[in-house]
Image (cartoon, rainbow, N blue to C red; front, side, top):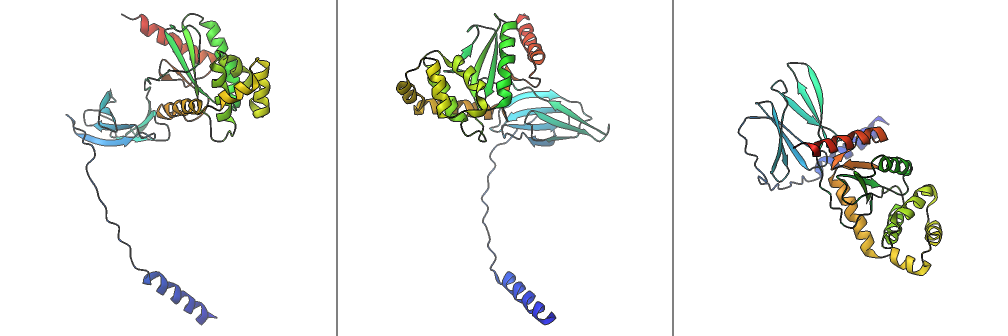
Length: 283
């Protein structure tokens, strides 16, 4: 038996080492050069692939786009000697051997969203804009509708809400529901349809959508034709791409005047609204 095992092992080794090596030729080039006035100590990239962070010996982090455009400089102090990034593209970990510390630096990137064609609720000229990325089959998004209504009620003249579609791949009817809502938007009934979809978020299907359309007095044939328009799907895809570029990972995700909301409670959002209004009052 031992001789048999030894023979098998020998055959395996012969087969392994008999396989010819495959050599891959590597082509390379310097894609981007970041010119600095200080000595670089460490670099890191954001998890979404949008930003390059360079720590210098002057205790500063320079933020660049991957194309090499400088966007911001943050003074973190000369005690910081290493930087690291994680799964959240808005967080940098600052390591200091001298102080024996790791600090968490949270970045607030101000996003400039294209709002063309997106449904709006509230005064069009409101100084504060809340952009909501949402999914009609998301339970958390369904709960957010009441909070959004409360926020608008508390800020009737200063806040508007813009709805952006971010259908999750795990929700198989989310895209169809989004297209139906945008078909309703063409008749100015997006928000009515929106409310009904969220009331039924956990059992959405073609039949339920047709029931909602009928309750809102849509012609069945015309509505079905409209909600299957490929142009609506393109807009939903644009919304989704904007969300990905802005660092949206799940739903609901809110932005107040371009800044991502981390505390989605009514109190937390109100704090950001007040801060945005205060900034606009400064000379």
